[in-house]
Amino acid sequence: MSRIILFNKLIRRGSRYGTVGLGTFLLDIGILSALLTWTTIPYPLAVALGFFVGVSVNYYISYHWVYAGTVQTFYHGYSFFIIMAVVGILVITLSTTILVEFFYIPIFIARTLMGVAIGIVNFLVNTFFNFRIL
Image (cartoon, rainbow, N blue to C red; front, side, top):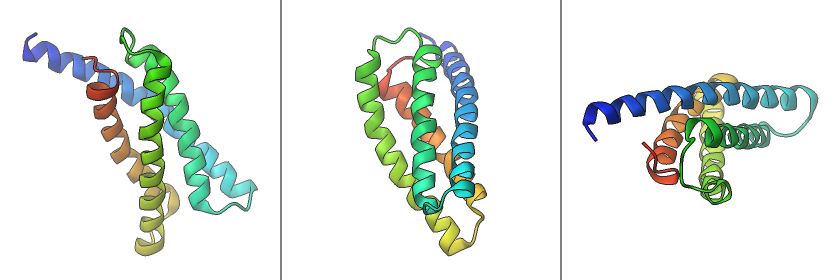
């Protein structure tokens, strides 16, 4: 397959992934906001819970739309995905906490910065390793 075709597929898949990612990120931020507003749980736990729900919804939509046609079964892909999600939760929570506590960046800005970085990494890992579809 030519490089141009591969590049075009990567752009199309990346655009779909970005669309899903933005929607599920907004869900994640909504959960974070609700938890911080209406509960007394510590913000790192709220960050982790919001991320886990958002990333789980992201997987479901991505499996059926972004990576449609993969030979990967839903549950096998999800088991790999859960491993990535646990790592993601640790990275997102720790890095957001560091930005808030040591750099005094407001939580929603810190969470957004980390969301962009993790989103790019997750797209690359899912595209080339989990679903192996391009």
